[in-house]
Image (cartoon, rainbow, N blue to C red; front, top):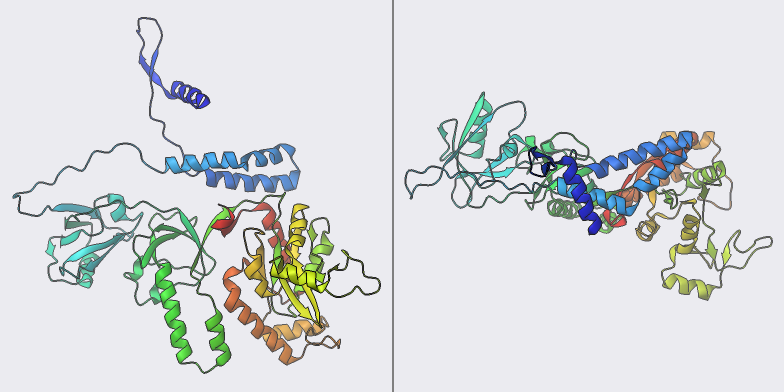
Length: 518
């Protein structure tokens, strides 16, 4: 506290200004000025600086830059930046209340007149008919829009006139037509809402787990106010006041006005209805079972995770059998064994001649391995020819603690236990190409079928088709967990794309579930 007071005095002296030059003791007195932050997003700027420095370090190996990165990544320093941003984004300066509106009679309602200049930008407000009174009222004010910036239009305000036209008895569409035909200045005569609670902008970021096109939505209050997005987009939620329609922007979008997107509750209800309707009209039992098992996912709250070289994130390769995950993993480890490693599996079978414990496998007796499985010590396990096989949690942790990037290619069901804050994996889906490309490339590479372990033959057409169907089911159930998708048509091209992903994890901040960061 003493140090904080000293800092405060120094800052006050720096930003102060002379109050009088003719004091009795011959010294100047300073009257402190208000300190105004230059920017309100220094934490985001620091993240960009770190990314730039990491790229520079890779090229030059600068020790000074590396030391600066470590300083900027210290939790105490990042917490200080977050506190600065939190304070600078709020306005603590006292404001005088709005002057009272002149009224002719105490029994008459207060009226306010608001003028907005019409431009190419939407007004940023939606209207509706009040179910109780039948009057036209402001339904919502879009954050950052013209109406919001005016500070004079609020949700619940009753619209009396628009450009001198009485809207009594008119529908919202009638009012919209008046606005569309208006030119220049638009004048609203409004009766203020009784409660004009200011709405603060949220700081929630989410990853969209479905596609949304406002123009195709039958129920959106205003299609022009909608915000389109695709699965995987990072969305900044600025308001969740409406239980059905949130206001949001694309992360990093410089446009001030927010747009409407379906809320989590609304989208979950839609998906549940669509599945029930689809099941009733679909005789395909397998597809119905897939829908029943599929998790209802809409948005995932995320935060930025900075790369930390001392604790590299595992890379998890997911895909259908035969798509080429083993070969991609083998090439990655062979390229740089000092950076990439994979786990040694555990098994309950006896060692074969020439096999060494801890080299080929970790050998355990069946009872011990079953106890470890029951205790949740394996991220995945299975039985093959009467013997248990599995990947242990501690095997992954040991590789991470040694500073290596762990490369895994587990069964897709292992994502349920593997994708946690404990491991913070980066999930890459290796997708098969279309049937013709798949058949052509596997034939040209003399790829051996993984469907028949007793033969070294190539893939049949039925096996290739099953590989594609299996991949589609994996995408249906687990697609919302993928961080990257690589189509393995040409193996060399797919490997180059995987290298880009690995380098990205070392140099760029990534959006991850918020629970992994907090």
